[in-house]
Amino acid sequence: MKIATIFSLAALAIFATVVASPTMAQAQSGWGSGGLVFQSDLERQAAQREAERAEIRKSSGPTAYPAFMQGGAKPDVEAEEPPIAYLEQIEQPGSIIVDTGGRRLLYVLSGKRAYAYPISVGRDGFTWTGTERISRIAAWPTWTPPPEMRQRQKGLPVTVTGGLINPLGARAMYLGNSIYRIHGTNNERSIGKASSSGCFRMMNKHVVHLSTLAHVGTQVRVVSNYSGVNTSAPISSLFSGFGGGDDAPVPAAPVKKAAKKN
Image (tube, rainbow, N blue to C red; front, top):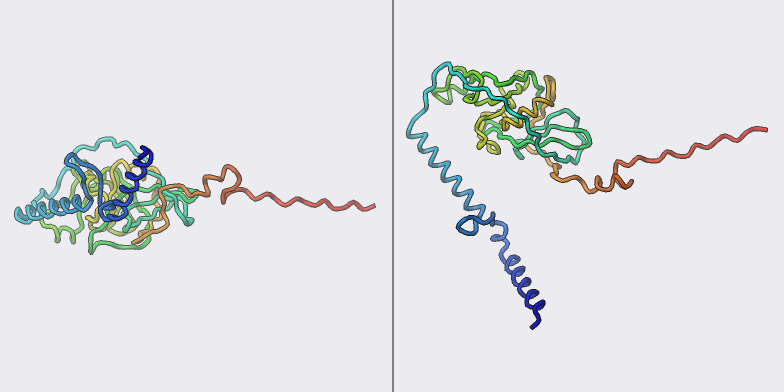
């Protein structure tokens, strides 16, 4: 049997195995030090660790903090630009869209593009939708938990000055007259989760970047699901330089000269 034929049969066998076992192919997350790692195993382990932490918190009772706390150091945080996303529909450049279902914040740019920041959103019972405008932007802001939060979580401080201990992180953008904010966090492990009381958390390096773009008066639209966002440029844009894109200029019709009268 020829070598080429052997390789062809081996490839066919591998292909048949993958097709016959789509669940295994989709579940595989990668290779670990002990062999195959499956996404379902990772999720189960993460859930188990969170359950164990919840039991520890429950048995130890609420932590009592001083009424007035110092937030600690306020280091310089270097802004980091997030990836660009491409929108299928036209949005107002300079506006912000918070997609709670996708757990991302979109700062709209021109040309149906947007900066896409990963965020943490409100947990069950603390989600909301609507439109607000940024009313204030603060660096290393003071955190004053509202009375209803202190009622739910016994032992919280009355106020915490800005700094690394403060849960609002390096920047906070206040949304209208509401109690909600877009803010940083000093706990980056919370990003991508539904764990807040209705505010939207960002990594400090991202909230600092956003604060250089947004301003007081910027519109913030909070939606439960925003579709039509792509991580790669639309195919039509690849041909725009050759005159075949959607944005290619339309040539003007030739102007007819009026005939001269004798």
